[in-house]
Image 1 (tube, rainbow, N blue to C red):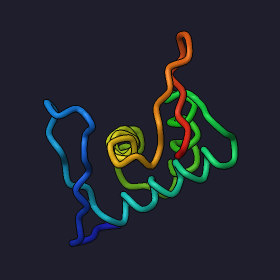
Image 2 (image 1 turned 60 degrees about the vertical axis):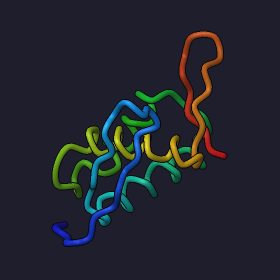
Image 3 (image 1 turned 90 degrees about the vertical axis):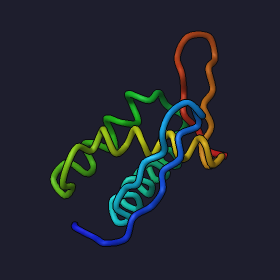
Image 4 (image 1 turned 120 degrees about the horizontal axis):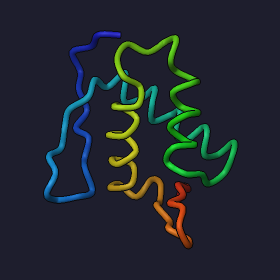
Length: 95
């Protein structure tokens, strides 16, 4: 899945550094996140990460969870998904 094209992933925390991820990896994980949220509705970070990891583990080069975490933060920073904290569990949803 090597590519020369990279995507700048933004962290919503201004004290953290933004990173560059291969565009092909970004697209695959980004689409998997949206697909799972649309299919199953709002869920916790761990639930969503588990689904994405299970979905991509056999076709992904590298750590799915590391890339998932960076892209999930990017999607929050860009307003594509939202983070809600009702009572105790943080849940992810889409805008």
